[in-house]
Length: 211
Image 1 (cartoon, rainbow, N blue to C red):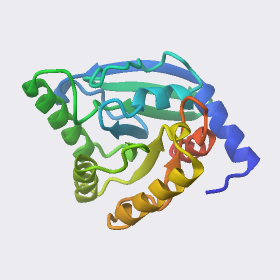
Image 2 (image 1 turned 90 degrees about the vertical axis):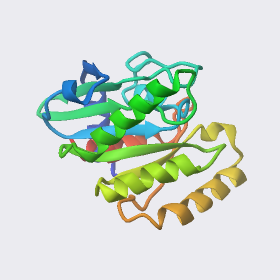
Image 3 (image 1 turned 30 degrees about the horizontal axis):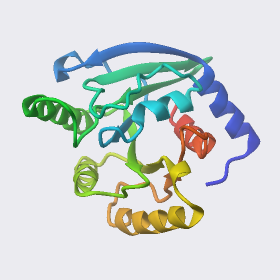
């Protein structure tokens, strides 16, 4: 998707604006009230959700990052505010592998699914996929849940700096074949590297359209 310079600059200003930590929720009953549009970040443990949030907002420590899968165990809410523009970012617990008791993992997964299914202010979900691994069965389960809940989502390939150009083309083609089967999927795949800042401007501008 191509954006003009004005759209790109507006998005940069929105994501560089004031950003406040709102809440960290481990229970559906203490999730913050719905105030304005929200975009959420979902994906397997250690896929790079927190790193992507930091890259989008051009901050290093807004969302806590870790080399240990499963560190994000709550729904983390941030509010971006720039002039009359407001957008809430939600960092979801990673699904899949995590160094935690199974009952805790089950709790995080249940909480995430309840949020995804019952949040009218949720405008889109960035579903992150490690480009080195591709789409797995758990990812397809989340895609199906999002389709069932009629929640729009966009596939975001992360860590592309680890791949060659040929490998990037291959994983994009394979991913396109899979997401074409899901009605709630945004037709364009976002290709990103939080480390090298690849694709961040494009994704940021797309998400700013929901502010």
